Length: 514
Image 1 (cartoon, rainbow, N blue to C red):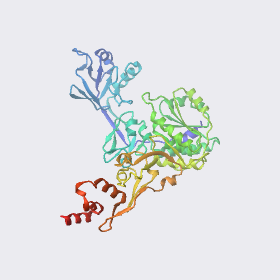
Image 2 (image 1 turned 180 degrees about the horizontal axis):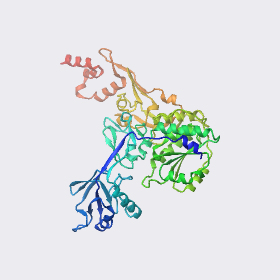
Image 3 (image 1 turned 60 degrees about the horizontal axis):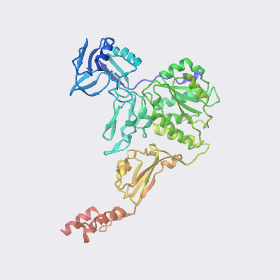
Image 4 (image 1 turned 30 degrees about the horizontal axis):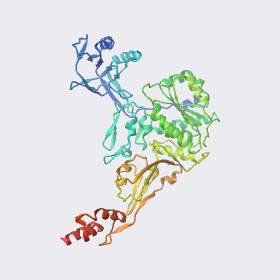
């Protein structure tokens, strides 16, 4: 590991926006009177209220004892709302001494401590609590672009991946968009990793900044070494501490890449690293967050390797978990040799989907065993849309709800077109189709020129008004409507022909009949 390479990647990153918290030291404890009494002395100078589990009257020195059922607890540091026996009380901090935590999300909000039976966690909480009085801030970790979000359109549900992935439960439905509560978001990056459209982005740093930093490091490395480098992505907490102590033990072909949270970098970054000439990438979870399982990140690693394997490359993106540095060294030493592409030097950009396709296109040009496409498992961010032409009436419901413009009408022709490069497989079109004529087919077309071409999914002959010859519908639509209404009492005899007229001629015919 070359220090000069690390120096090439040292840049100062300033948060674009800070989120403020204000705590006045109002602490709510929840638990038995015995548990509360045992820790009260350690929580000075906080103003302590305790919701005790005992039904009998309890007195605890320097504590306001509350009684009643806890109906709900929501909020964050400085703004916790506890609804107790129907009454809402505001607190700044919560020490949950219950056997089972009140809040169930994987990542608890700032200011909430639930040590359970873990005595070390309790000791750490008691050390931190008295210090949490005053004004604090943290970065706003995310950027959200609602215009390309595929969550919903016109009330039709589509992609929910970010909501399902967020371990802090900071993301919620907001009509056709989603809402991220910046006070609850703690920047793990899971939402960014799974977002298929790029609507959710990491802001500290942005993708283009990380890519430019990687390019600088790899260019510096290329001046020193002939062997392709292996990129080790790690967090700036546990992993950074271990590297500062033992990083010199890593071989010179390892480039360590620090990031505040390993979840901030996912498929676009890994693929770009491979396109820049890396031999592989290891994402190292050094157990900084015991409450993170990083399942979404591991799923993205699996998907990225599938895309690489589809071109004949060996599995090159790896996951390593643990804080045993010797085990990390062994992991890196035992990595299999991989095929390395001729390095590309495309500039970094803050567009995860574009970066992914650019990197894949470059890797495809130099692929050991390229194939035209690869089938993918759901959920996938790329894919085809299949249309049952016998069922489709070209009503264009799918076009009207497509959030990314992948489905396009024929303007002056009864035609349904598709641009595969834009499709994020959100499924809104599939749900919106009244004829159930649409099926999603996850895949990746490696030849992106083909994917960017507009192609016809379905077209019909134009039907002309039987009165004025104006084109106003498709033959199939008229056939379908007349077949459904031919037995209706309002459309018997010559009245059925009104369905074959344009709007103007239909009105004239109705007045003439009247």
